Length: 318
Ligand code: SD4
Image (tube, rainbow, N blue to C red; front, side, top):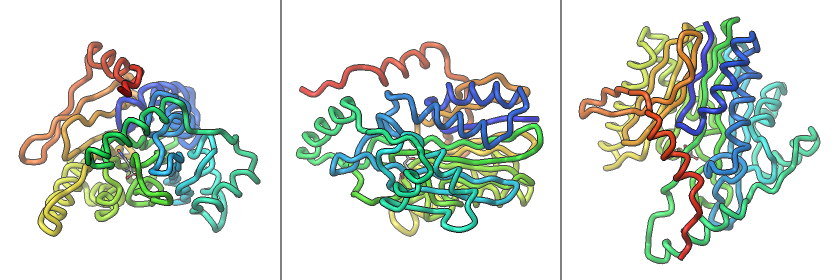
């Protein structure tokens, strides 16, 4: 068996690419890296890599994480700027004995030494969104809307499970703010004997439940990926509401070592992309019921076209 699952529609092209690679016998780590790079490089996705929206100082600071489920090796980056592919740097860090998690200037120094591609990641389009949002903020809109992290779990024919994330985090975040995406166990987790999981949403809340680890742990207990995702999201959502009066956006996907997959969310509008040996690449739209059960249906052509149209529409600044 082989397969790859990823948060959001934006991962579709990357998932298609990885699917081909896996079909040809490529290893999980290479396939997931290529898939995430495809999202990082696409300028119209404004929450990952090139074209990602900046922090409050109009600087694009990126987070990324990578885990190899054979060895438990982890590499991660927080708040790195001016590098094209944070995922590749995170993966490289996972090969180091120590110093696996680097942030800010230290991460940039490492990436420079390792000769990763340097790139100005702030696009004119992202600047226009920034100017627009600045004006809206004067009218007291909350800064924390608008985000979509790409997170993936990948299984290859040899049975290796990897998990990885990449994000520009929350739009208008504070300089130096790090979300859940580079935090192992929160943004991502992989164990080749079990499976993997990854999360997207409000990092500050996802972290409180170590949600990716929790999903993998529930799969160890025998839950299917779908049941594990639903239980993890429902339990964390309830706990946050009980203890804090509200819960941020929590959305997750998971795949086990048999290539079975699942998803869950506490919001409307969550989508994910998936492909396996038995399943052509597809985008699913997730619906959440009152009781926390989540179902999904294939996105139709109209939805897919509208998605791209909105992503590529000119930024109305007025
Ligand atoms: C973060 N979890 O930085 C990320 C943002 C995200 O969908 O996933 N948004 O908190």
